[in-house]
Amino acid sequence: MEWIIAAIFILILFSAFFSGSETALTASSRALMHQLEQNDGDKRAGIVNRLMDSKERLIGAILLGNNLVNILASSLATSVMITYFGETGVVYATLVMTVVVLIFAEILPKTFAIQNANRLALSIAPAMKILVFVLAPITMTTQFIVATTLKIFGAGASQDEGQSAEELRGAINLHDGQGDEGVSQERTMLHSILDLAEVEVSEIMTHRKGVVMIDVNLPAEEIVEQVLDSPFTRLPLYRDDPDNIIGVIHAKALLRAIRSQKGELEGLDVVSLASEAWFIPEATSLMGQLEAFRARREHFAVVVDEYGSVMGIVTLEDILEEIVGDIEDEHDDKVEGVKSQHDGSYVVDGIVTLRDLNREFDWRLPDEEASTIAGLLLHEARRIPDIGQIFQFYGFRFEIMDRKRNQITSIRIFPPHEDGESK
Image (cartoon, rainbow, N blue to C red; front, top):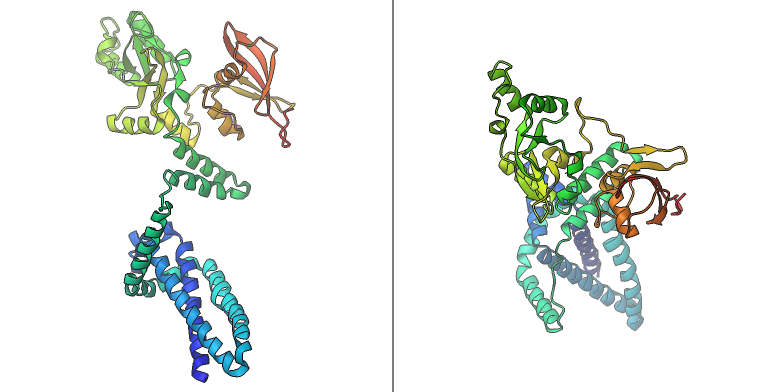
């Protein structure tokens, strides 16, 4: 009788091992295991990664072993109880084994495994590798039976597609930083990287109204003066019509040409110094454009619409700013596009982009139908509003402050209170 009790005790230990192993392996950090294998050459981490690559076989082997030892332990306990208490021993065995298995073979090992997932996963990986190999014929047979049964009932296994990005977003949001500004900035950057494939260049480009362009028909002296007065190093050149861009002049190339002519501007051929203009469609994604910039080793592109009209320009710096925020140097002009007011409202230029507002103030204004705040107002109002008109949508209140012709140039925005109502 003593050997049966000892066997039950050993089986409970095996059950605890299986339960803890399942939790440890599934809860371990894949990123950490990959790093340990690739950078540190940890063979145990490599085993963990291989086991998780065939997760169905791993779980099947663990469940098979766990059920086997639990059923065997329960059967032995039942035989012992029947010997001492007769037929009622079945009830006693059920109650005792339920409590013992629940506490010592499930809750206790799984709690420990959750708290020490990575360390425990590395420890039990070699043993689990052997177990999965030994039980492979049985687990593969059971997987085949399960898959066939599901197929018969039209419930075949389906793979979730397109979830990796959403999982990353969820993982990023979990680390809220507890008010840490540094962590908050890093979280914003990671979100921006994930958005690169969804944002089009038309949403971040410098609109043609804000682009400094030079007419090549001007005298060389005037062209040089305009280039030197501009804060930009690359400027589009056009002939007769701003839509007829014939090249892009780099300030450095112009200065070198002036030096080679020893300061003489007469006879300076600006067109010959310009590089070929690169035209891209407005629907190009930021990720695609970033890869194109890298492939062509370019920093500057002209954005055109479906009719070939110039919409604006986009640079490599524009895309990088979408990730890391504004990048300013000593030549950048500080444009106050947003001014905070004492009553908590903001006076915003109409050309300020919705993405900049959302990033700066953590708002949730939609940018699917419009890229600027003025564009959003036009889209929602379905008409050109008058000065002084007030609109309210998305929890915000918008007051038209100024308008030039048909363009909204200044808007006062009243953001919502914490209770969701606008001021």
